Image 1 (tube, rainbow, N blue to C red):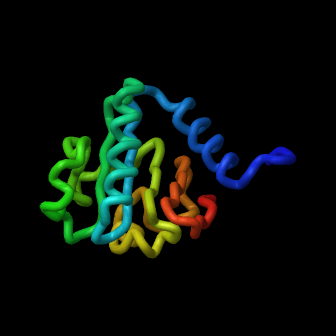
Image 2 (tube, rainbow, N blue to C red; image 1 turned 120 degrees about the vertical axis):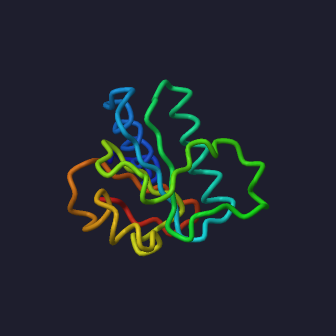
Image 3 (cartoon, rainbow, N blue to C red; image 1 turned 90 degrees about the vertical axis):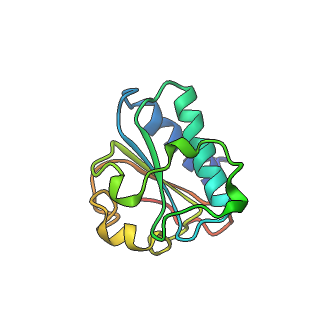
Length: 139
């Protein structure tokens, strides 16, 4: 981090670098917290749609069981990116967590999904995007 650069600037830079290094067909996993609310879903799906707009073809979004959207979120674009946790790519080249300032907020996904279990020890890039101010930097 350079003088005058904030932690948030540093995290955004790290995220942009991780995305820039990926092949356009690389599997990407987007996750948000258990029982997601509008800010978690909206930021995850919006980011996913941005990746698709950039030409990425293998973008998947999920959240822990119980997997299903409340009717209040039926209007959100990007729902075609949603997959049940069991159908999420097991070894993505990039994982991004939304609105989950700690791995514990990812519920069973953090313990059972091959790409997330054992965080922060796995090898692929992992970026945390915290919608609220409680950001725990990803390793």
